[in-house]
Each structure stands twice: as C-alpha cells, then as structure tokens.
Length: 220
Ligand code: 5RP
Image (cartoon, rainbow, N blue to C red):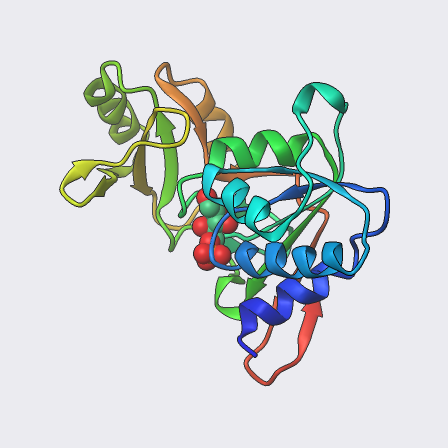
C-alpha cells in the first residue's frame, strides 16, 4: 500500500455515521474519497461537501451524498492533504490549485485532519513554493507587490496557458525561502489588494496522520 493511501485510510476511521464531512483535493485526498465511498456503499450514512470540481466529480462517482452549503452551518470533519506541514500544524496547501475552497471548508470544520506521506513533514515551511491566488485583473501589479514582499513569484501555467482555478483566478507560486513566521507572512499577504488568499493554513488543522516508508503511521 502506498503511504498516501495508508494515511488516508487511517484518517477515514474518524468518519462516523451522521457526520457532515469535507472532502479535500489532491492525490492523497483521492484515497480518502475512495475509502469514504467504499464505507458509504457498506452503509455509512454521511453527507459531504467537496473542495474542488475534481473532488466533487470523484465523490459523485463513488456515490457519496453531497449536501448544498445552504443546508448546513458547517462540518464535523474535513480530511485533506498538504504540500508541507510542520509539527505545529502550520501548512502550505494549494499545490493542486484548490487552496481557496479548501480554506473556506477547513475554516467551517470542527476538525481538519491532514493526511500526508512523511516527505511532507518539515522542520520549517518554505521549500515548497507558496501558492497565492490572485484575481486576474492587474495580476502583473499584484505579482510585483509579491516581489516587494520578498517573494520570487512564478505565474502558474497549464500547457502554456495561464492556469485558472475553479474560482476563475490565477495562482502565483511564490518562493520566500524558509518561512520563519508563517502567521506574519499570512497576514501580510492578505493585506495585498489583488490577493484572494494564500496557501498558508494557520490554526486550522487539528491533527495530521503521516504515513512512513517503514509502513508505520504517526499522528501529529
Ligand atoms: C490542493 C492541495 C493538496 O492537498 C496538496 O497539493 C497536496 O496534494 P497531494 O496530496 O496530491 O500531494 O492543497 O490544493
């Protein structure tokens, strides 16, 4: 079994009957959605929301019931991946481009369980370039503002075209080097006009399940 699948399937043990569940995005969350689908087909009764069009499609294929946002106040649990996490459960997310929807869903979840293989666990965030979601209007100026904040931003592309998120926005992948103070950087980014949100998740994750190459798992 691969490490992403190992962590994902362990986290799905926290899903209980009657819960409202957030479904993450990416190659690790994929395994969680598959496992939840299997449990639903065996009789688990849950309702879910998805953090991307891709995860919504997968959930439908798996027969997981989806609930409209206006029918519930929030979620009991969300299971999602991360690009990097530290032991304080600060995260970098958005490698798959879904950071904005993921952050909204995480914010409204009582629990956010992060699932990852051991390569994602770091002492300090910042090796993975931080995804920053930008409105397309005057994005060149917003990229220049990011540079003035100390980043080396790269506009994300997809087959030579500018990558467009599920929300119709762009993403700048920003190298800041080691991030000493994730909370401060998060706040500074949020103050830049044109920035919709960024991939730093602070104070949102409640637990992380990590799969290790020796087949063991740890919970942070
Ligand atoms: C998508 C994300 C993903 O959770 C993150 O990119 C990790 O992806 P993967 O599980 O494929 O490594 O934030 O926006």
